[in-house]
Length: 429
Image 1 (cartoon, rainbow, N blue to C red):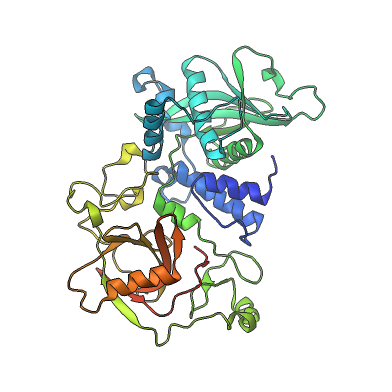
Image 2 (cartoon, one colour):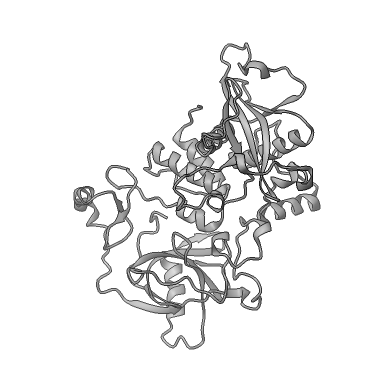
């Protein structure tokens, strides 16, 4: 398995929409765990294998084989997002294509490379070729991906069963791929830089764990795995995966925060106690804070479009939209995320001002993804107070502003925001 730096892991996660700060104290092991979860999210794996299923496997052997009636594999593996569509439209209008080019490394990222690989595999299968080989620029690292067969999860979704092998060539003698050694005219080589190869190998390694022992076609010297269609990760998932929840003392993954300021994570009471001498100077307790109530508006500027979700992300997959499923990135204007036990407790809320009558609001997990709207009956002037707070304490992003505030869910359609206890704006998000 290739090894990559922590910086490269952050770059790979960033290419998938999981943005973590460059100076995060997360260990390499924690980042690798995040990457595996991001891989699952990009493959929509939990729509295939329910999270409550005891066996985390796909029974490939009982699935029907992909047939000509299902169409070409290259078309079936495409999971275009709105972002992709807009980029393609721009390219068509300007005549400039900025997509993946397998002959040059510039302007390319690992996630785009993964999706491009599926396109290559689809092309190879449709043309009757047995697979592909990925090589880096120095031709020192190579990955053989040999197609075994393709089964159908449903009429539109292929599962591509592959045999793979990773090889290093530090002597200039070529890669040891056994009987599939280059040169072979029926197996084409494609340029993939190390981070792209690393991501592909992690995908294959992750999926190999889901192949049941009952399905075991053997190709000597090669490993069995599979590939699935890939789409951009929806905003609700990237929000969860981008939580920078590492312990301020030992850098292990943490599940609890300072109960007073909510902005510092700890893995244990012991670590929190160790940090208190330093943290107490910056900790801003919420006792006695001035809270203002704001109604939650789920529809926002899309309220005149009741047949569509209130919002969608440019990362959402086109084939899923329109939909009322919050898990696919959209919101149904008629529904508000239900209050859960403990939601009256303070939490960090991100508020964005895009110079419109609407302020976008959401929490870390994107379970709450809605708007504040200026209302004429705000007799207390709290709207203007909030705008001034953003201007004086928030962060300017281009022409827009954003701010992190403490909030409490006090009703199905109402939040209370602390107006005089603003956390440091470098809070982990």
